[in-house]
Image (cartoon, rainbow, N blue to C red; front, side, top):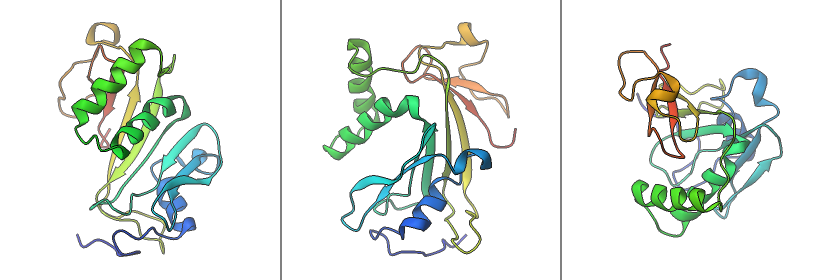
Length: 181
């Protein structure tokens, strides 16, 4: 599928377009109240719209493909730290997780006490005329820090359309759901 070009790569889309695309992964009843982080003309991430409950990230104009994600605000300390580490030049996902896991263990990062959802869309592209993202793949996860196969009754391996637990026993443990469920 040919991507829909709305702004040159490296150039942030208009604010309203960033907001519309960023909240698209959410259930419709959550979209109006979500906080949205997006990019200004300077390329820096900032709050485009205040909100509560969920935080949505607009597409990074420097990224080669379309990706937007929304997560429960209880995950913000963990997610924000990942963004800080990437901005400082740490590019390895394993290294980012090593730092964050250490900081969770030390109490520097506080993880949610209850399950926390994340919704995302990847690939395809956002069409501002229709408000849709043709060709995008959905991903849904529920973070349950330190959950295991034993504590949840879920497999640690994907199998068909069944939910499964990824990174069990870690602060980043989460249930993966396939979009065809």
